[in-house]
Length: 146
Image 1 (cartoon, rainbow, N blue to C red):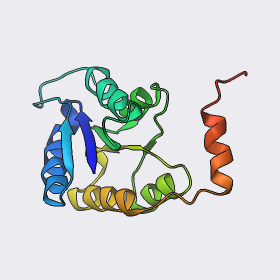
Image 2: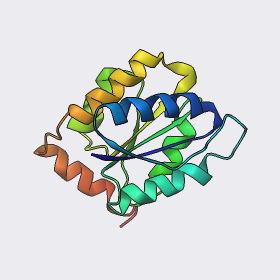
Image 3: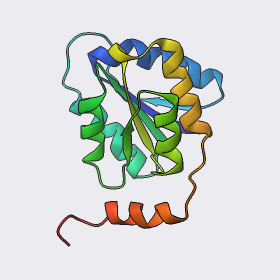
Image 4: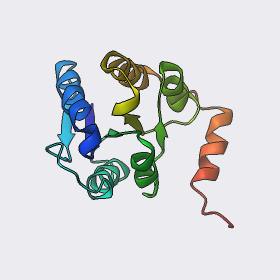
């Protein structure tokens, strides 16, 4: 699978860790930066990764920051992206099975490395259930107030 990866400075260490982990699992990683722990503005890196997922250039995307909140918000500004903030294996499983999340956001300051890897593995391995959830996702794609 082709996976977009992006972070700000506070997520750089785990971006590096996950890049190696995913490549070891046979995935193709497209790294959108940042490339150090020097302070940067996360939208500059998350936006291009989210646009690559929305355009189908990458099948999925993972974004990282200190908490993951701002990164999820930035990714979700891109039409066609459903980025879930995940903090447990269960949130990752539900993000895929119920929400068909094509991106996830992780907070490096809030997760142990083994948990971050477990969240990513669960999210990648969990299929979308479809059914009643399709209607809800279609509503997400309808502009508010329409």
